[in-house]
Length: 171
Image 1 (tube, rainbow, N blue to C red):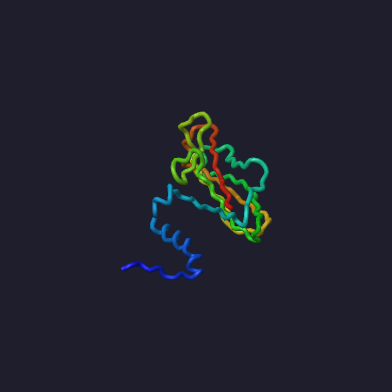
Image 2: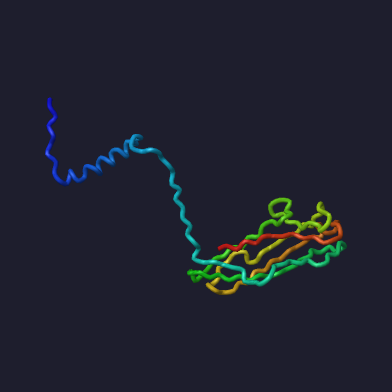
């Protein structure tokens, strides 16, 4: 039985190249594609707020001279200011203090002796408030409090101790 072509309307004739391309792409025809690749698609949505420390100079927490005969906690405090700008009228910030350079584990901060590398002085650190919301361009004061307990300093080697803690402000 002979194949008899059907008459095609002009709209069908105009769509034939598109239909053929769609059909071939669905077949995964390797004869038409010389290779394949992956396209990584990424985007970053910026915060509507941006917060920055506004306190000038280096931030320091100094416990001063500690008497090894004391039976009381030794505390030290310092403060830092921050301000948030951006398009949002209210900014929510978060402050995170890492465990420092000489931590013996998560949350186990310790200062290292200046000349005796194996000697450490444990301490605790609190940042308050560590999170909050402030109006755009308003100043916020953050208090950082450190505590050294008698069990940490009563048998410590005499001398200076230090540590460096990174404080991250988001956003």
